[in-house]
View 1 (cartoon, rainbow, N blue to C red):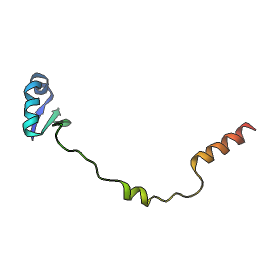
View 2: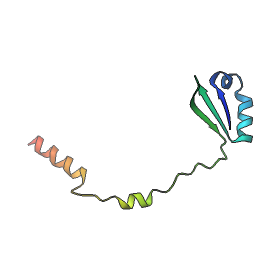
View 3: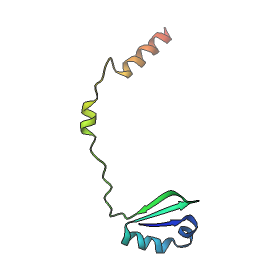
View 4: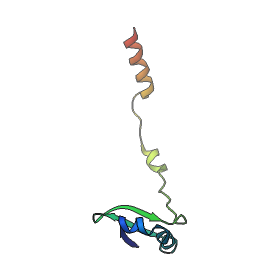
Length: 77
Protein backbone atom coordinates (compact mmCIF):
# COMPACT_ATOMS: atom_id res chain seq x y z
CA UNK A 1 0.00 0.00 0.00
CA UNK A 2 1.38 3.36 -1.06
CA UNK A 3 0.58 6.61 0.81
CA UNK A 4 0.96 9.98 -0.94
CA UNK A 5 -0.18 13.56 -0.44
CA UNK A 6 -2.70 15.46 -2.54
CA UNK A 7 -0.10 17.50 -4.43
CA UNK A 8 1.69 14.35 -5.61
CA UNK A 9 -1.65 12.90 -6.68
CA UNK A 10 -2.43 15.96 -8.75
CA UNK A 11 0.97 15.92 -10.46
CA UNK A 12 1.22 12.14 -11.07
CA UNK A 13 -2.30 10.79 -11.61
CA UNK A 14 -1.53 8.78 -14.74
CA UNK A 15 1.39 6.94 -13.14
CA UNK A 16 -0.63 6.41 -9.95
CA UNK A 17 -3.37 4.68 -11.91
CA UNK A 18 -0.77 2.26 -13.26
CA UNK A 19 0.45 1.61 -9.70
CA UNK A 20 -3.11 0.99 -8.51
CA UNK A 21 -3.45 -1.81 -11.03
CA UNK A 22 -0.27 -3.41 -9.64
CA UNK A 23 -0.53 -2.63 -5.90
CA UNK A 24 -4.34 -2.53 -5.65
CA UNK A 25 -4.41 0.37 -3.20
CA UNK A 26 -3.08 3.91 -2.75
CA UNK A 27 -3.94 6.12 0.23
CA UNK A 28 -4.15 9.88 -0.41
CA UNK A 29 -3.40 12.22 2.48
CA UNK A 30 -4.06 15.91 3.04
CA UNK A 31 -2.14 17.61 5.85
CA UNK A 32 -1.07 14.18 7.09
CA UNK A 33 -4.61 12.79 7.42
CA UNK A 34 -6.06 10.08 5.19
CA UNK A 35 -8.78 11.53 2.94
CA UNK A 36 -9.18 9.07 0.08
CA UNK A 37 -8.23 5.65 -1.22
CA UNK A 38 -7.64 4.58 -4.81
CA UNK A 39 -8.30 0.90 -5.37
CA UNK A 40 -8.27 -1.35 -8.38
CA UNK A 41 -11.58 -2.08 -10.06
CA UNK A 42 -10.71 -5.78 -9.82
CA UNK A 43 -10.64 -5.71 -6.02
CA UNK A 44 -13.71 -7.42 -4.60
CA UNK A 45 -15.49 -5.12 -2.13
CA UNK A 46 -18.43 -7.32 -1.21
CA UNK A 47 -20.32 -6.45 1.93
CA UNK A 48 -21.52 -9.03 4.47
CA UNK A 49 -25.08 -10.26 4.22
CA UNK A 50 -27.60 -8.55 6.47
CA UNK A 51 -30.26 -11.24 6.12
CA UNK A 52 -29.86 -12.56 9.67
CA UNK A 53 -29.95 -9.02 11.08
CA UNK A 54 -33.12 -8.19 9.16
CA UNK A 55 -34.74 -11.41 10.34
CA UNK A 56 -33.95 -10.53 13.96
CA UNK A 57 -35.85 -7.20 13.86
CA UNK A 58 -39.19 -7.40 15.63
CA UNK A 59 -41.84 -4.88 14.64
CA UNK A 60 -44.17 -3.78 17.43
CA UNK A 61 -47.41 -1.88 17.03
CA UNK A 62 -49.05 -0.75 13.83
CA UNK A 63 -47.14 0.35 10.73
CA UNK A 64 -45.87 3.93 10.62
CA UNK A 65 -47.80 4.55 7.41
CA UNK A 66 -51.06 3.76 9.20
CA UNK A 67 -50.16 6.11 12.06
CA UNK A 68 -49.40 8.95 9.61
CA UNK A 69 -52.71 8.42 7.80
CA UNK A 70 -54.63 8.51 11.09
CA UNK A 71 -52.88 11.68 12.24
CA UNK A 72 -53.59 13.40 8.92
CA UNK A 73 -57.26 12.42 9.13
CA UNK A 74 -57.52 13.80 12.69
CA UNK A 75 -55.93 17.09 11.66
CA UNK A 76 -58.25 17.58 8.69
CA UNK A 77 -61.54 17.00 10.46
